Length: 236
Image (cartoon, rainbow, N blue to C red):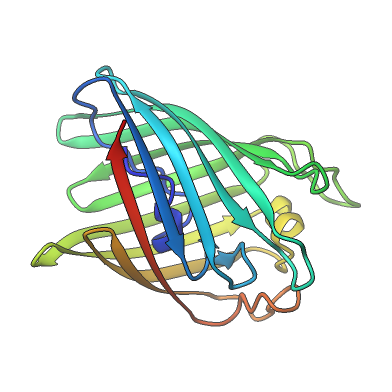
């Protein structure tokens, strides 16, 4: 399974899994000059360091955990995001698939833990997917609805090797629902898009959104961002 850290250098929460060949434990560590999730900084445009552990079974089942530092305002003390996820992935008739559940855990002060169910299908270099809000401990504000399915993230990705082991990635996503505004402080629904290049663990990404408002101070989520990172995967 590709590491959860790919969200630092590619398209946010895309848990892209291939067909497992055997029961296997792997781990990953990574660093980036910014933690970008669905087009939005999760580290106030500062450095993020992360790591995780994954298990894949020969029947397509996988599970894992991943952690990173996060911060959402210029005067915030650095906190953490800790994810737990499990699902099934595989391939049938030349079409790949991935279905699962992902839980986002934050520190007690945040009180914003939430979970999503997700699914994607892929054909050749293309992937289409959706993440659906399933549950959250966050309290709804006036007129807000954090019910199952009321917030979604849909996306399309294209990835291909362009030569000498360099992979080109293209991504577009759309985040809809009250929870996205409450969680990241962005006004209303929005789209994000990015272009990335990666090779041998190194990555470079140009990412932006269609937001007209930056949201909270110091986040600059309506600006173009440049992200560089390095990720390392290894067997346990």
